[in-house]
Image (cartoon, rainbow, N blue to C red; front, top):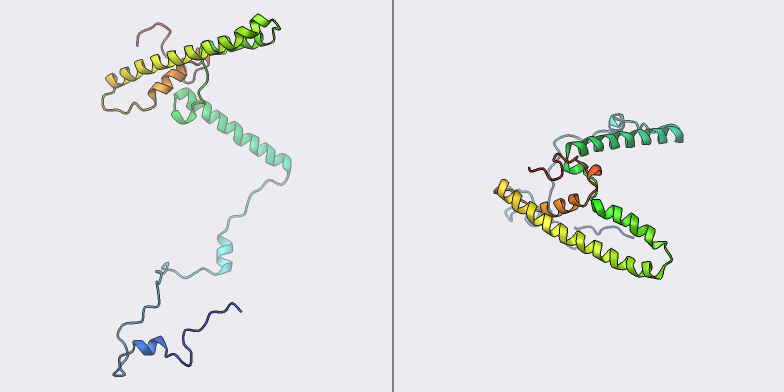
Length: 189
């Protein structure tokens, strides 16, 4: 039903016969029947040899053991990431957080949300917008300063992303920053 048709039939001559010279001598060059891939340089291994090379899967025998192994891998990963954060490595840094003072302000705003006074309820959205505006302006200001300083101290180096990093780091709670700040507030660097 889905078989290929044979290329030579009784009616059509074979390709080899068409490629042979008319004088009856054999052809010097073989007939190109399509693309031929290069060999891999070694014979295909027998199935028994290939199965011997496989490594057995060392899955835990029960669910408790699997969970214990999973928790151990997670603990090792967390310890490695924590050490990387303390060294200041880029891959280990956490996702950037909100402002140092903005976090405290959010707690105050959260408490104010539960106050049932109409005056407080009308002030909370305004305070949120003011806090966001202050964060935005401060972030732009800090980003520009840090980028100018980086371009001055590291001429020829790429300063891509340094503005956003500086703005987001400035918004974090100082005691929770990773890597830890090396300069005290107000101290010149």
